[in-house]
Every structure is written in C-alpha cells, then in structure tokens.
Image: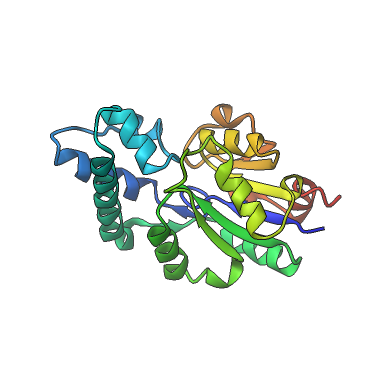
Length: 218
C-alpha cells in the first residue's frame, strides 16, 4: 500500500507568517485599511479569495478579488527573500520519509508560484512527488478538496495519509478528508489544534516511532 505525508507549506515547512502578514498589510494599506495580527490569525491557512471575501464582503466583483489576490502575492514574493525561513525538524522529517519510500506532497492554500519559489529557494525539490495549490479551488480549507487531490496525485488512500498542519482550518480539512493529522503550534496554541491526532511545538520533537504510528505502520 502507498503511504503518503501531505505537508502544508506555511507554518509547517517554512515560517512564512510574518511575510504573509506584511504582504496583507501592504495590500490593505493601499485601501486605507489595517490588518492586525489578530485579524490575520483568524484567516491564516485560507486561500486568498476566501480571506478577501471575509474581509471585503460578497459585493466585491470577482475580477477585483482576483486582482487583489495577485497583488498580495506580488508583495509576498518581494518580501520572501528577507523573511521566510525553514522550520526546525523539517529536513529530518523529509529525509526519514524519503528513506522509507513514503511519498510526499506539498498541499498549500498559497499560489503555486509561491510554493515553487519557496521549495526551490530552500533546495527541497527532490523530496516531493507533487506540489499542489488550492488557490483556485472552489472552496478553501476547511474543505478537504486540497488533501483529497493530494492523495490522488500519488495514488494513496486517505487513511494511508498523514497531514502536517498548523492551521485550525487545515486540521479540520484533514479530518474531513479521513486522514490522520499532526499539528504544529507555530501559528495557533495547542488547545485550538486539539482535533489533530497529535499536537507538537516543533517537528524537531518527533521521532521515527511517532511517524510510524501516525502513518499506521505499527
């Protein structure tokens, strides 16, 4: 049977929260609005269109939503080189999974250009069998579509997949997809992520036995 680990990007592989916050602040400042850390945290992990609809309402034309999302991502890529960093324990986890023949996928709500840019900048390309973006899916997390597409991309059944997440909506999406979930407290406190199968403060805290248990290999 095919085992797979599905990695969220922001807050799991890379610390991009500050970069995304700065990008949203730059975008919304152009509209005379302020984005606080609390307002940002409520939507972190959701696709741009869903965030913009939440903030701006349903009356904004679709073409404007698309244009605003693209502009926010342009801000993000301008800032990424200065602020994005690889999180502790990620490379060790990637190396272990590759050594065990476990297939690995990035499943991010961010745009594909951002996913590719971060993966290449951090020299992670050879670890992944597929890169997926949920930016243009009809529904954002907590809808499970991005994770179900990820499993299909590598031919894995949902119950043979482990999702690595940091967002409340991501944990819920994993559960709706019928997948086990490991949550990291990089974005939200442990009590907010309690629906996950395991919550840790850092991927550096994990050992091989824990990975095997979560993947149903024990």
